Image 1: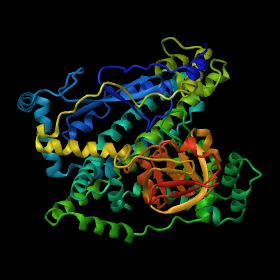
Image 2 (image 1 turned 30 degrees about the vertical axis):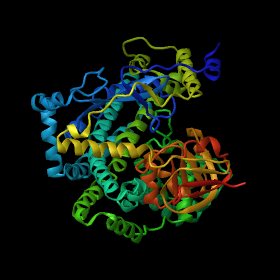
Image 3 (image 1 turned 135 degrees about the vertical axis):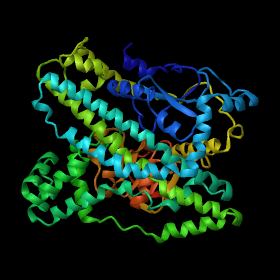
Image 4 (image 1 turned 30 degrees about the horizontal axis):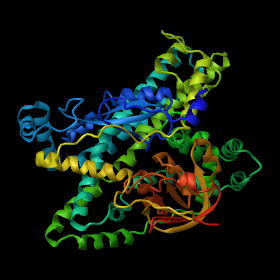
Length: 574
């Protein structure tokens, strides 16, 4: 029986990769992950990962273990001072004793108090904007300006490794900053829920307009659209459907110096960022010329409306009125901090993960193209299923290089693994330490973080229901829109999207931000009130329904649908 036969006809009894409960990362990596990226991610998470950020914010989480199973990635949270095989927290008196005697737990107890006293997230956000973002942007620009084609094998091998190390450091900064966003927003949401009973989806309307990092691509896209609009020849090229997309982009560049400058400026900033996902097999904007051209045309035809500031202000007043009078001063303080922190993750993820990962893809494909020209490998993208040591060996470094046939087999195996849906969880549940056993500041930090993480994936207050003509999910961005559904399950599907379409996909990343000027609405299988789709759809002002469960399998591609972001309903029209 072949692997394809086995995958399609049997259910593999997948086993947990270690003790405890392991959860599959369906948000970032719904499909089987390339071998190069699997090695990178497992090395990152099991060495640095979230450790630094967790410790800096006094959290009792130490890190997340990450291990591959069946080509997918599974994670398990690990607490400070807890043995690997522990299935339940220690007795209460032992737990209290640990905060007196265990050096690391004593540190985190003290640190959590300092975090809330100093409002550390404000300092981290300022540091991101004033120091870290400019530094990372400059390094990314320097890496992408290197002409990889003219490097000899040794220089190219070193450049691939340098790009990998730069990606490692950029990911470190992303996860260092995560608690600066999640804790204050989660802290405000948790208290608001306790005071008012509103769902996080309802509460998050108050923060609309506070995460402007998500709409940053519009500024340069506006400049590019203005440049094309002002030159008649450029506008004609943009609309010329007889030319393929690559040809149209090059003719646009040649049509006018101002258009060329605006195009290059946009490409320099966003061209090498991953758009279609987080894996190295995903595509960058430079590889999606149709999307770029459609985005320019959409921006010319339909300017993104200005935010209606009255709507979130009215929602904020209604929500505040539901808070008990005695708690309103505390509520105001928590909301102020949530506003100060909100959107930092979405603001930095493009710079810290999608851009350097796109540059890592670029370097590997450049090496792959060279090896294809020599007959060493069969396709450039097959190099994505080699390990870093194997890539070095293929470029003349030490070690054993895999054959082209072996790399082709791995690439095929990864595609076949996608035919089987793996369990969301593997292993046995572990009881976390009760919050009442934790020192107050530690408990507050942990509860805020966990509240955010819980509602990143789904809103447990509602369970999606479905009929043949209707899907229920979580309405995370208001409004009602009717349009053509475009089902996006893979990078190749992005070529179908036209202006005004409704994007129907499993989940989105910040790379999708360059697509949003095109779209009339968004529907996803997964997600909750704090997922990327929810945050950025609110900022762009387009209807969105997330967490439908199976929209990508139940909605036919090309059918007209109605997306109601207020009610969380998607209607399939005949």
